[in-house]
Length: 423
Ligand SMILES: Cc1cc2nc3c(=O)[nH]c(=O)nc-3n(C[C@H](O)[C@H](O)[C@H](O)COP(=O)(O)OP(=O)(O)OC[C@H]3O[C@@H](n4cnc5c(N)ncnc54)[C@H](O)[C@@H]3O)c2cc1C
Image 1 (cartoon, rainbow, N blue to C red):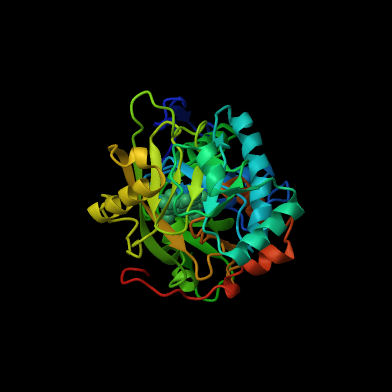
Image 2 (cartoon, rainbow, N blue to C red):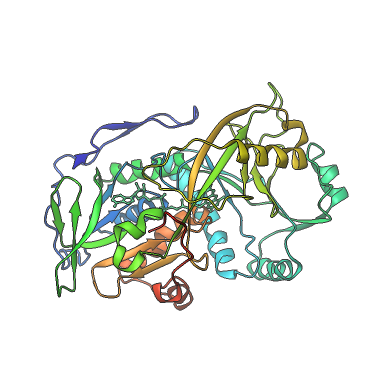
């Protein structure tokens, strides 16, 4: 098991300095953690997975007094994790799914507070335009926004043209505009959380962990990739698309893993038209959606023809000419001035869907010290600080709201149609 002590994680952005991560000196290797409670009455926790579910849970658990160790096969912000890449959209528009509008509304405030605390800009609220939302969902969305007092506008095609003439809207009759929505920095924020966690004395270790159970036991330990074992404590498996392998007895068949390719189109030199200050993000529902340029290019994410399986460990992350063509088709439709521009960066990510697109956050039905958190289903990044608060409260037994418990429970999910290489 390798300690990430004084290990430098290079950030992708020139605005953020490279971080020097180090654990508190002298922290004991947790080869044996107490399954019972510590002096403060709180359990020690091992978090397996340093994506948004794991890293934010670790930080919040630590802030609430728990002693926390994070294990990850590749480290926080690694290129294979679902939480990778430059940016993610944040918006409260969720159709009828009011719980996520409420959570997202709370997450905005938490992101604002956290970026202050981390001393690093992570939130870019330039507005999101949603087009082609089915009428029934749109009505529900308006009602929920009114209840939560979240501002929105309904914009006609003519209003879109006059407000952002650099876009093309032939296919849009009316759009829902959420002015407070926008972008969060993805990889950079995960690294920022890891740095904060380490500064406060947490430990992050490179190791692949697997659930190790003994016959008849009500608790479980971990088998690590270096051959060692870690027994006791509370174990949180926040392994994203790897959950079916990490906890096969309950997660096999519960997560479908899809390739998702993203393309950054370069703005013309010196042209700020598509930068976040001048142009909003778009949540389109036909072939792709897009996000304005912060410092890396105008991001287009095709959603058409994406039902392609991926192995998150072994597959090459090289984009396909087919998806690049879909991205360029979308550019011609929405941002024609960028259609002829070069793709200046690209990435292949993994989407990990649950059967009903709701998160899975629950205690293992047979092992009382084991918890699962994941099933982000393409919409968990924006919620990260809210998820951290929620998961830490559940693990520490501090809160257990009924609506969330039901929705995120293992038993409310089912096996999902597998791809050839899903587990
Ligand atoms: C292209 C794309 C666009 C998206 N857009 C948005 C968006 O606009 N807005 C939004 O809110 N959300 C969005 N999402 C969803 C969001 O990014 C994910 O829901 C979220 O990042 C999932 O995080 P996670 O922590 O569950 O998983 P991950 O980030 O994958 O983290 C899991 C970690 O666990 C580690 N791990 C796995 N198994 C083991 C093991 N056995 N031992 C040790 N470590 C292990 C891995 O190395 C990995 O680091 C998008 C996702 C994708 C792919």
